Length: 202
Image (cartoon, rainbow, N blue to C red; front, side):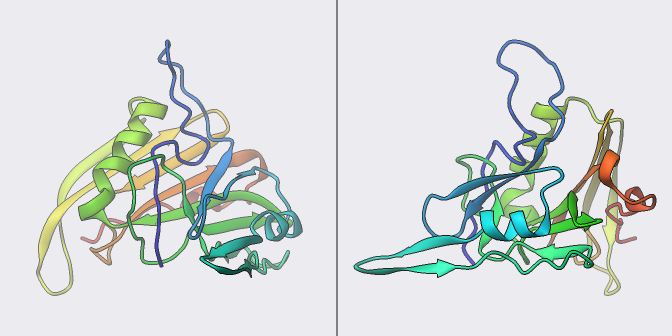
């Protein structure tokens, strides 16, 4: 799946032109895999609103456009794949994640998401975007990770605990070839939502 990850991500990453003020995430900004469609899913979007907003006509060259249906997000299911979409980080793509963004719902409303990215090709872009928008993390750690086969690799985790949101970054997870960003909007999240943090693979 072709991903175009860009530097204004999540709609949370609106750069501060003249101040160092932190801009909390407002939701998730997505870019369609085909065409120039962009969507901001704001916190509290329902599963039905999400499906409608993520349905689009994909260009097919000289052929009629193909309708790409939005995800079938069940109001009772917490996690939902945003198929045919990727997180919009600006003009730094393309980059390919192992799976599409995972949207998280509680009581049928969007409260969070997980973004996956390839560490080697895009890890520095994601890290810079987060630090540029959110400032110095509340906590952070650098270490050397090791998988079950003994391979070692650099590992960094960072957490931002903001007024209404928490943001967790892991340069690599236990799969080694995947980094993650997890964003949670606390006012709509279930009580145990913040327990889901990137796990260091060591």
